[in-house]
Picture 1 (cartoon, chains in turn red, blue):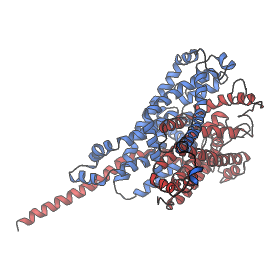
Picture 2 (picture 1 turned 30 degrees about the horizontal axis):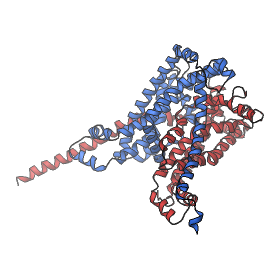
Picture 3 (picture 1 turned 180 degrees about the vertical axis):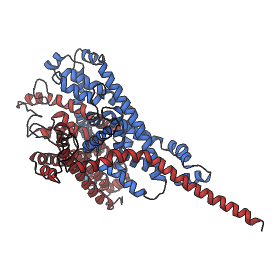
Picture 4 (picture 1 turned 90 degrees about the vertical axis):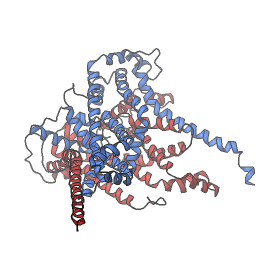
Length: 314
Length: 289
C-alpha cells in the first residue's frame, strides 16, 4: 500500500521527463534547421518560383513586369538558332567528355593504380588544375592559344613543324574544341580522383585470383576492374554531364561565347540575355529550361543508380 | 612450351612499369606547361614577353610583380576575398553541421520532405540560378534590405548554394558515428545540444575540416556571384579583379601573367597544405551525392 504512491511518483517523473525530452527534441530540431532552411528557401527555392513567374513576361527590368506573354519566351528560345547552337555545343562537350576526358582519367587512374611508387605525387599533380580558379585557368590558356606564333606556344609548335598557325579561339570551327582541351586539363584530375578511390575499394584478391586463373592484364581490366567500378563511373558521368550543362566562366572569360556564337553554351546565353541585354523575362525562361534539363537528368541518374550494381550490390 | 616464350621475370615486371612512368610523366608535363609558362611570364618584362614568350626568364625581372604588389587595389581585393572566404566557410560549416546533425540523428515528421527539398539544390547550381537569385536580391533591395553591391550579399548567396551538397556529405559522416554512443549519452542525461557539441563535433572534426577546405576553395575561386552582386571596384574580390584586369591590360601579356600568378599562388600553397582534406571531402561528396 505504501509502495503505490512512490511507484506512481516515479512513473510520473519518468513520463514527465519523456515528454520534456520530446519538447526539447522539437526545439533542437527547429533551432538547428532554421538557419539552413531560411537561407535555402530565400536564395534557392524562392528564386525558382520568382523566375518561373517572370518567364511569362516580356520584361526589361525597369518598373514592374506587366507585359504578360504566356509561353512566348519559351517558344522563342526553343526556336532561336543561337540557343540551339548552345545546346549543340553543350551536347558536343558532353560527348567529348564522356568519349575522351573520362576514359583518359580512367586510364591514368589505372596506371597510377594502387601501389605504384610515387602514386601520391602523381595524384597531387593531376589534381592541381582542379583547385585553380576558372578565371586563372582561362587566362593561362589564352596565353597558350595566342594566335601569333611569336607569342603563343601552341602556334609556335605548329610553325616549328611547318604547319600554318591557327587562330584557336577565333576560328568558328575550332574554338569549341580548344575550350574542350582547357576543360579537360582542368577537370580530368577530379574524375581520376574518383576512379582512384573506386579502385581502392576493389579487393586486391579478386584480381589476383583472376590472374592465377590465367587472365592477362587487359582481360583483368575489362572483366574485373571495369564492372566493379560501375557505380564510380556512373557518378563521374553524372558529375561530368551536370558540369557541362552549366559551363560558364571558362567560356565567358575566353571567348564570351564567340566568335559569332560559335562557342555559346546555355549559361553564356542566359547571362547575355539577363545581364548584358537586360531581357530579364527572356533570361528567366532560359534559366527555367536549364533547371528542367538538370532535373530530368538527375532523376534519370537516380533511377539508374537505384538498381543494384553488378557484383558490388551497391 | 610457354615457359620459353615468356620474357624473363624482371623484364615482365619492369617493362610495363617503365611504360607507365613514361606515360604519366608526359601527362605531368602537360599539366605543368601552362602553369610554368605563366610563372615565367610573370617575371619577364613586356619586351622579353614579346621577344621570348616561353623561354626561361634570364635574368628574372620582378618589376611587374613589384608594380602589382605596390598597387593598393590588389591588397584591397585580397582583403575582400579573404573576408568573403572566411565568412562563407565558417557560415557554411556551422549551418551545415547543425542541419546535418538533425538529419542524421533525429526523427521527426516531414524529415524526408526536408531532405528532398535540400536535394533540389543539387539540381539548381549557381551557374543556372544566378539570374533568378539576382531577382531576389533586387527585390530585397526594394523592400529596404541592401544586398546588391555588399560583401554580405555575396557571402549569403555563396552559403545558400553550398548548403545542399555539404549537408549531404556531413550527414553521411554523422550517420557513421555509432548509435550506441548516442544512447549512452542520453542515458546519462545528456541533452541533444550537449551531445552535439561535446560528443559529435569533436568526433567529426576531420570531416568538418574537409568540408571547410572545399568551401574555402570554392569561395576563393568564385567569380560569378561577385560579378553579379558587386559593382564598386573597392569591393571587388580577386577573381573579379583578375577578370577586369585582363580586360583592361589584356595586351600587356607580361603584366597580366604577373597578376594571374600572384592570384594563383595562394591557391597553390593552400592546396599543398590541405590536399588531404580537400581530397577526402571531394571523394565523400561524390560517393554520397
